[in-house]
Length: 260
Image (cartoon, rainbow, N blue to C red; front, side, top):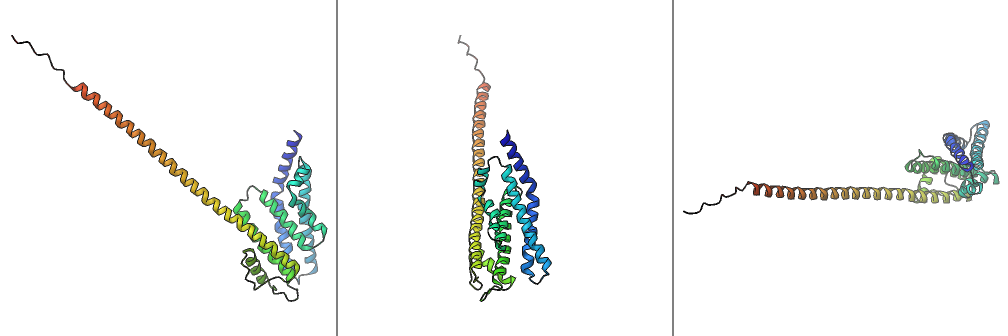
């Protein structure tokens, strides 16, 4: 069937592109971090990082287009992947570096969730580390030169990201620009969502453990009941056999002779 063949081709494409796209995500991380951590680097280094960012985003966008073409139902694919479409179109609205960061993170997160070899624990841990790293770099890039800003170093930015994602919010460091506060909102929402995933995962583990223990206890109880029933049957059988043997061993009395 044509639909089944298209679906198979789409699955094959997604499986083939998993590893290259995740590797490109690492390239994007380096390209995004270098200009922020080394603002005094040569101009060619900044241009190379800029080109790398656009190439990575373009590759993810091309991946979306290919998956759309291979999908049996085009509109169904678009409706079921709205974040992918937003991530592809977002950097085209305004050539802002932060938008490329957000769109690439969305596309990488979508691809990571689709990878069967990535477990929930690995995904959550990677999401936490990635959001903290990119959040720190982004807020440092936005707030470092802002008048009145107090996030001036990478250490300040990492500390702010950690307290923001955990929703602690000590207040010793806080963004003062609009983009910085927008980043803070994104980190807070992401932190709450990830905390909910972790809590649900732990609760599910405890529930599964309790259910497994209950199932084991029920199995042992059923086994004991079966053994008790068998012992009763054996005792009854032994008693029956003992009674039969006792009756068979009693001698028959000979009839007494009549008196003369």
